[in-house]
Amino acid sequence: MYDYLFIGAGLFSATAAHILSGRGKRCLVVDRRGHIAGNCYTEKRNGINVHAYGAHIFHTDDRSVWDFVNQFADFNYFVNSPIAVYRGKRYRLPFNMNTFNSVWPDVTTPKQAKARISEQAAEIGGDPKNFEEQAISLVGRDVYELLIKGYTEKQWGRKCVDLPASIIKRVPVRFAYDNNYYDDRYQGIPIGGYTGMVEKILAGIETRLGCDYFANRYELDNCANKIIFTGMIDEFFDYRLGALSYRSLRFESEEIDTPNYQGNAVIHYTDAETPYTRIIEHKHFEFGSSETTVITREYPAEYAAGGEAYYPVNDDANTSLYNRYASMAKPQSKVIFGGRLGQYKYLDMDDTIEAAMALTAQIQIH
Image (cartoon, helix red, strand yellow):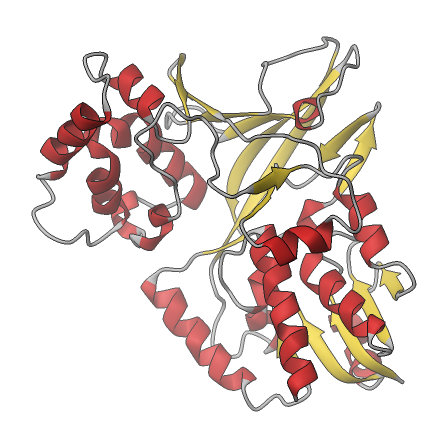
C-alpha cells in the first residue's frame, strides 16, 4: 500500500513526490508514456539534447523554486532572445524598442513608441473585449498585424477576436532595447537536459512507465491512500459533462549536415501562410559545437483523442465547463488534481513546481 499515487511523471508529480518521499511517505509514480519528465523531456540525438515536445526554457523569480531545481542540475546562462520572421523580414522579440524601431523606423525613443501605440490603440475606444483589442492596446495595430495576428490564429486555431484578452497579457512588452524575453532574475537550461534533472528528483521513488492509469484504474485506485492526478480532468470524469478544448502540437525534426542552421535557438514565423509557428535549433540552448545540427518545426493542431493535450483553451465556454468539473472534483476526498491539465490552466515550469510545493505544504498542515 502506497501513501500517494501520482498519475503522470512530469514536474508537478516529480516535485511533490520528492518532497513527500523525503517526509517518509511511500510514493508511486506512473506515466502512460515511456519516459519521465512530461513535456520537458529531452533526448540525445547525435550528441545534442533535443527538446522532444518543444522549447522549454526555465525561468523564475522565485528563489525557493530556483534553489529547488539547482539541487538536481547545474544551469547554464542561456537567455531567451527569440526572433520573429514575417514574410522574410526579421524582427526582435519580445516586443521592445528594437521591434518598434524595425516596424516604425522613425521611432527611436520610448516616448515616441508609446505615442505611436497610443495613437493606434485609440481605435479600441474602451476596455479591450477580446485578444485582438487587447493586443492592439498593448503594441498598436501595425505590430499586431505583423507579429501577432497570424501567429496567434495558427497557434490557437481560432480568430483573434474569438480569443480571450487574458492570453496576450502574459506576453512581455518593454520600452527598452532589451531582447531578453523574460524579466525573471533566474533563467537557464539544465546542462545535460531536463530528463537528467527529473531523474535525480525522482531518485529512489518507484516509477512505472508505459502504465496507462485508465487501463489499470481499479488496481491503481486501490493501491494508495491518496491519488494526485495530473492528467486531463475531463478524462478523469469520463467526459461526463462534455470534452474540454485543448490545443496540441505536431513536431517535424530533422538532422542537418551543417554546424549552424539558423543562428538562434527559436525563430517564430508570424505570417499566416507559413504552416508552422516556429523552428527550434536545439544545440543553441546549450551552446553546442557539433558539426551537425537538429532542428524542429512546430505545427499547431487541434487536440484529438489519443494525442497529446498541450494548451487549455481558456475561453468563457471552456472555463465555465472546467468550473463544473472542478465542482465535481471537490467531493473527491481521495483524489487531488494538479498540473496544467488537472487544473486546466497555463502553467510555466516554475509555476508548476511552485504549485507542487504549495500542495505539499498544504498536505503537511492537514
